[in-house]
Length: 101
Image (cartoon, rainbow, N blue to C red):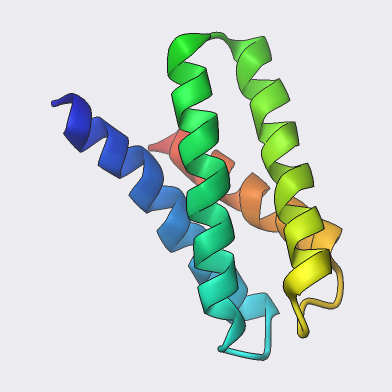
């Protein structure tokens, strides 16, 4: 049951942020970068959230995820025009969808 929840917590954001990438990023080659960055940041955030649950921790972790992803996109992307904007938008979309589910 824990493994199922863990996979769901990683799979849903990955799917949603890749969907956002399809909308906002013209170069489909960037999908690999988005997937790798997403798996890196969301795995770390999920493990930290399991260790320290709570709404303030969630807020801090999500802000950290946005920042780390934006830095990665700025450094490695050739096609993301606004790394901070994309990271914030994709993560907000993912977080709100997860909250509604």
